[in-house]
Image 1 (spheres, rainbow, N blue to C red):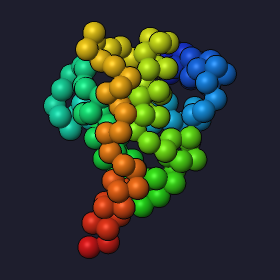
Image 2: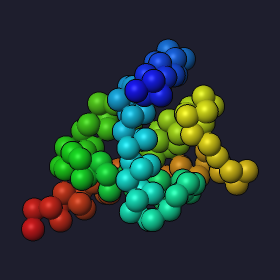
Image 3: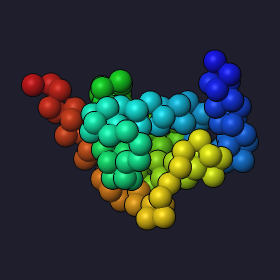
Image 4: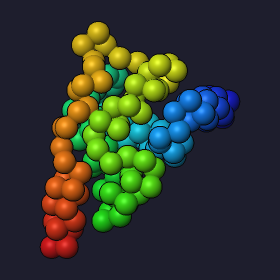
Amino acid sequence: MEAQKDFYQVVEQIFGRDPRYKPDCYEFVMQALEHTQKKLKIEGHVSGRQLLDGIRDFALKEYGPMAKTVLKHWGVSNTADFGNIVFNMIEQQLLSKTDQDRLADFENVFDFEEAFKHIVKDLSL
């Protein structure tokens, strides 16, 4: 419980410095990271691309056709936004990175419109 309280306190501090992304999105990223690690059967570090794929998968699992709308509400409209969120969390030691990890790893990985449109089409089958 104390670690969770600390997490939310740190997220509020991040939000105070960088209000582009709502605090709920930081918790979502942590949940999506756990989802990604379980799906890939990895304990520990995942690449930016792996995390983004996991974020997309988790968003669709949690929010279905509303995923893009929820992300937009949180201030997220492209993959680079998730990079900013991840690196905000790294800066505050909520996440860690390797020497090879770069913010650029998150830039233009997939187009939100196409990524979520395709899945929404698949869900209607």
